Structure formats: structure tokens, C-alpha cells
Length: 319
Image 1 (cartoon, rainbow, N blue to C red):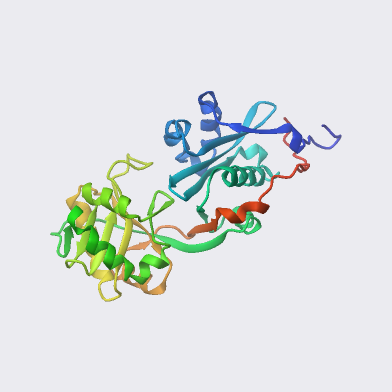
Image 2: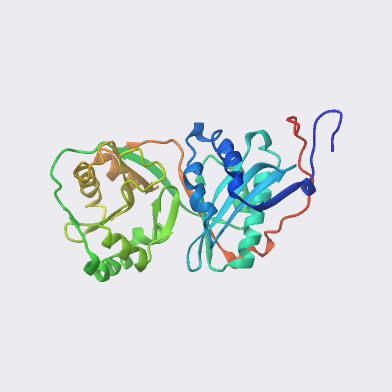
């Protein structure tokens, strides 16, 4: 419906449906306008189109794709919301909110357990959505980076599948493990560190013990991330006592060079003064002024996350 001052459209004119392969060009166009064209979305489209266990949705206005959202099943009772994007020409008019509520409504019908997502600390609209739909901020992470060191590794030793029982016992006695919501991080996603995932990473050579097992390092697969052209060692999980953390973090810089990850070491570290001090002592520095915030909630509590029919605000950028 048009007015003399601007173009408007109502909720009834907005359609949400499963994403289709023929939406690729529109989705790539939206992504090209986000994060200065460095959005990871184009890299994961094939994976998301072929996901049989979650949901991949687009919002359309007069058959034009103007928004997108993804629901991913990480494991039994473990769900992840991601990929919430709106065409800049339609931002600020409630479309993100409708997509967010829609995904939660879909999840309420298909799943149980816990649903989580992460976002930047300066993403105020998403923080409001989280509060509106009963999410709690579970943790805050700061991004640290450091240059690799061309020196022999000193205290890190590769662990194998036979080490699983004692790693599990060590984790269950680690305060940091529970402060991180029993999770590790990989490209903005946080996964529960289950025995199955730990076994996979042990078999893949991604788990290291520090001074036998006075600390634990888990790295992410090399060359399998969303920005594969960057030779970065991405730390998934870093844990040690305060007296060992700086030395462990320093040895990670040596390990990076050994693994031919010569550009940098990158870690999203739980925002705690003692951890920040240890990383800085080991030669790391903040690479981002903002933080990554992890939100969580029980799916059973999403009963009030309804999508309501409502008028969207007027937009001066007409259809």
C-alpha cells in the first residue's frame, strides 16, 4: 500500500519460505553488502541448501528475497541459529524480528533441548531480540591474535584417542570448561565439547596436552574454515591454570609455525581479566574492539515466541 510520503508494506505482504537453490544470486547480493563483502554466507550456501535436519529460510517481498535465516541442528538436543541477514534497503523495518520469531516457532515444533546463537556486542537490535525471546547471555569472548614464532615447541604434545578418558576427567575438574558453557568455538559457532566431538578431534590430530595434561589445546581443522585462503591457526579451546596459561599460549605460537600456519594465531578468549593478562604476557593483542556474545535458552521456553501479524514501519526506499 502506498502513501503520499513513502512506500509501506504490511506483514501480510511478507512471505517466509524455505530457501531454494535458485535464491543463490539474491543471497549472494545481500551478502556482498555485509561485512564489506567478506560475509561467509556464499561459502556455506551449498551446505545449507542440502541440510536435511535444520531449516534454511528466506523472507520475500513481492517475490524478491530480502532476508534470510538459518537453523542448524548441531546434535541431539543442540540447535544453533545463524545467518540472520536483511537486505540493507529493508533494514530497520522489523524483518529481522519476524525472521527470528519464525525460526523459533519452527524450532518449537521440531526440536527440544537447547538453542544458542552468537552475535557482536555492538549488535543492539539482536540483543533486544534475544531479551524479547527469553535468551540469556551465557558468555562474552574477546578476539586475540599473535604472530607465530619460529621456535621449537616446548611443552605441547599431541594427544590421541586413548587419551579421551583422562581428558574428560580433566575437563570435568576445570572451572574454565563450565564457564565456557562446556563449548569450543569455530568461526563464530559454539559447539558442546561432547565425547564424540572430542574423539573426532583426537583422531584428526587436533588435540594437544600441555606439560602432559596441565593444560589443554584444541585447534580447528586446518584449511576447512569459512575463510580458507587465510593461513591462520584458529584455537577452538584453550585451558590451563593461571600459572600455566601464559606459557601454554606462547607455545601455541610456536606450534602455529610448525603446522605452517604462518600468518597468525587467532583465539576468541573468554572475557576474564586473568586470561587477558596471560594472553598479553604471551604476546597476543586484541584484534577487535567489540566482543562475541553467546546467547542460550531452553527450547521448551520458546512458547511465547510467536510471529504476530503487524504493520511494518514505512520505508522511504520504495519497492
